[in-house]
Image (cartoon, rainbow, N blue to C red; front, side, top):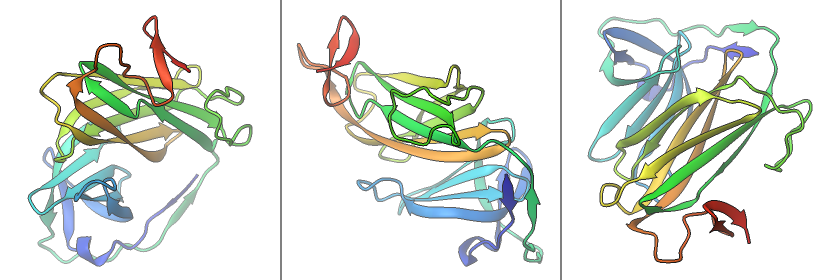
Length: 233
């Protein structure tokens, strides 16, 4: 595994992350992008100098910061200006051996109210399998920790998940309640941790904002529900 400490971009150079009474210096901005193609929310992912991962979401109306601590727990946080002069961190590299994992994701892409949304994570030893067939189990790896949060179209957290990959598979599910989740696109921010390395992933799914019609299905596109189980038609 290679961990690098990089110069942060200008916009964050004079700020720190504050959470639960502690300050965390920003070491690296990993990427910045729209939360989804349907959203006006801009998102930034990065790392602190002590290895925590953070997410920043900004729209014209709000700013939200979430910190993933070293124990894999989500914390509310905020950005604060640095009041003393800080030196720009020097580049440094720590090298150690670890297993590189390959990750496949699947989910229910469209969900009705009063139905379950589910997503699935599979992890593999990348030297044994690096393809895209979700039905494959060759080279599967167990033990990776999965942390995830579901964000609604307004940037609010609707649910969170935490658990471990077992037999190469992790499943997260939540019931979409009637009249409480608005119609629109939702984002799932996922962090997979294995042997001290973090793998950020993201999914988007659509909530119809109404119960499933009679005879309908809450299964992924191309599948239908038979005896309560989604199968390919």
